[in-house]
Image (cartoon, rainbow, N blue to C red):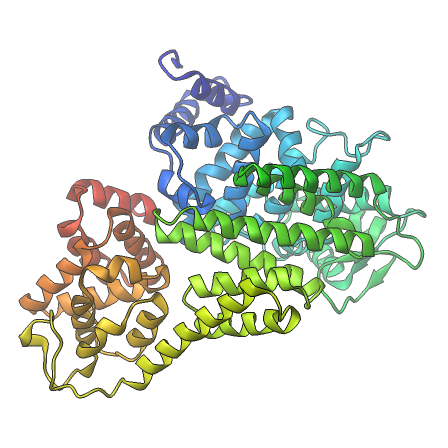
Length: 578
């Protein structure tokens, strides 16, 4: 098959992907190559930007997806897998990601080792439970390939501490065993039983090899039941039944019924071997490297080193010294993500919101270790304020102020938030304002007493206020008129969580054949970006009825810059329909 005109990185990706494909199966080879060319020509750039929370060029996107040859690019590859969506709307992003991972990248030992070291196994273990069958099967295939000796000899005497730490975390502190066991009980794709049995056998054997000083581990009754189900499953192959019997014989002697999880394993008293201290030392170095990058304003690289330090210590977080280190790393990640969000003020709201949510999550994790910390509480308060959750922000800053009452920055921030909260409460108290006065800038034909919300849109200045006002309206026509009164402020106020509700209001009103309201609906959609309009359709694809979807496509086609044929082709691709 001719790839001479393809860019070098695409040629290499195609060559790796076709390794092992039967030489006579030319149709399959052509299908794989053409699919890779299509994705290379048009990578999911907008979704990647939203997921990473940063601006990417087309070349950046192609390098991350097709040629992650550096540790930095591998980290980006893993981050997109970790923070990408986990529902049907993920098809455009996660399907090509997992496909390239399995078909191409896991065949490279260099990539495989970097992927493991930056925490890729932990992310893959979560994706074993992905709601899309194809994505789930690719995650199983990729994880199986990464746990074979072709990438790393996991049972070698000289196995490095970093590899041990990576797999220790996955084996004991992740959804791996639960996802494998559920697949054993209810297989959802071809080869699911075989892959699940092999991965379970590998995991149990590996943990016993490295972390039990007497060669014994205890499995939960959930795992035992899953293996028993396969051994008696008439639809399982003879080889699968035999492997299930072998695992039952090998690991079914010590069984415990854990209260903290149905599918898990543990150690008999005094028989657990703790991870090496060198892992802690590497984590400390990674944190210090992150601090240096942060001081030089290299925030993205700093988050990579902090995340690496965090992943290294997942396996031994019960040790007090490790808990102290993790607390500092989590605080630094919260601060860095908040700073990155601040530097994206001119970018799309989705990217900013994602970074603020990440900062909040890191702050909360740190507070779960020690709830009386001013630093993560301060970051939490600022993030909540910037997300327009003034009640929660004020509560966080009151708590910070009680811990450091003499800190001027805390005092100023608390006053700022309480003033904003007072304004919000005043606006809420004025919901019953006299509806006969009208408001400048709102057309007279919509200034009538039946809908008092029309006269309060000028007080809607934050997403939080928008949300409260929206929830008071029930009729689709009322919501449309409210959106029209908001005017050009709509894109700034519209949070992603309102996407489906907005489109539903537009569709239902347009379906009523009211021409005047149809014009309002189209004007509202024209205020949104092309990407936002496509995201609205994706929400419909996953949640609405087919007849509503058809109408939604027709409406959005009228206001989108994409051609009708192009938009409908995109819909077919996203929905998997012919």
